[in-house]
Amino acid sequence: MSACMELIAALAILAIAQSAPAATQCEIKGDAAHWAYDACFWQFETDDDLHPGVVACAERNLALVRSEGACPATRIFKSRICKLVQQTGDRLASFEACMADPSVEGSTVRNGGL
Image: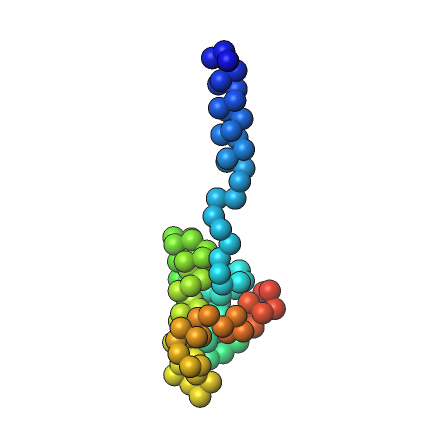
């Protein structure tokens, strides 16, 4: 094989590799921005997206999504919610059970937006 053909083959392989998905899908379903808001709603015990505490919290959470990435940030938000759930009468068997339970989500995640 000539050097030119080897270069073309290498470029083709590189193009195919770059078009493949870079990361696997997150184990926690839902948009990270929706989880960011739901964590704030749980924290402030409200569904008012204009609540000053929620607005400030959501801004911090969205910055976390940008800095950490969607899936790691989503894990953080769900863990915050699970910590709050464990403090209520709705607590699950354990924190780990809460994290694994796909039904533990807020209305923003469930409804696909505010």
